[in-house]
Amino acid sequence: RRMAQGLCSPSLPPSLPPSLPPPHAASPQRAGGAIDPTNMMPAVPKQQPAPGQSSTLPTERVTSSIPRGAGDSNWVYPSQQMFFNALQRKGKAEGGDESAMAAVVSIHNNMNESTWRRVLEWEALHSAECAAPKLLRFMGRPDELTPKARVKVALGLADPPFDRHDWVVDRCGREVRYLIDYYDVAARRAADRVPATMHDEGAVPSIELDVPPALDSAGAAVDRPRMLGRS
Image (cartoon, rainbow, N blue to C red; front, side, top):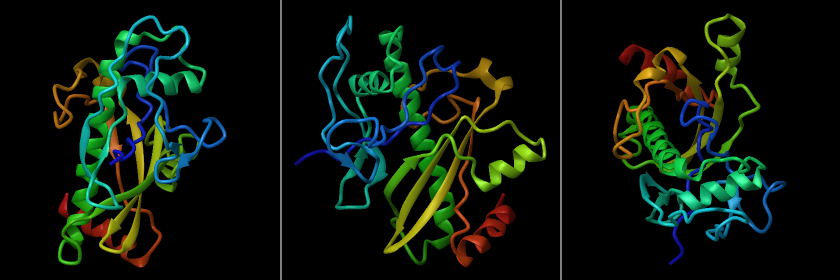
């Protein structure tokens, strides 16, 4: 059985690691071949070395803790080779340090696990309705500010986030969209380290997550003050 496609990655701040941010999921316009609509990545991942690649990169993939909406499998993270190939597709592989890919993949996986934990905090408000939410699909939208980020930037409360993802969760038959902003907190960069595992909480304190549900429904509007009361 073909493994579930990998999660797309946040584009990490340039300090993690220097000059080699991991790519967003490739869009249909940038990538050749069939596209998986659940993650906007090539349906058949390319694991062959890129032209001009000077060293061999691992092709092994790590299974996440995030349940996939279709079936009973979990999402599977991209390999180091897949990341490097994606950089090449985006025209960013030239001069890229292949030896940094292990750190890039480790940080990527860790950030996605942290994001899912935050999503589950919101979903716990509906545990009586759905005990086992799943991630249906997602999309990177780095060039579009969420409404909340737009307000924070306009009021001078924050610099623009360096990345945005929209995650759509299956709440036992009901689709719920989460608007995820990734902020770079420069003052915390000195404490950053490569995560020991994908569940290593606090490894990258310079990346701050904001993971509210989109105001697509009255229920989401109610959830926001409910969560505020819990914090």
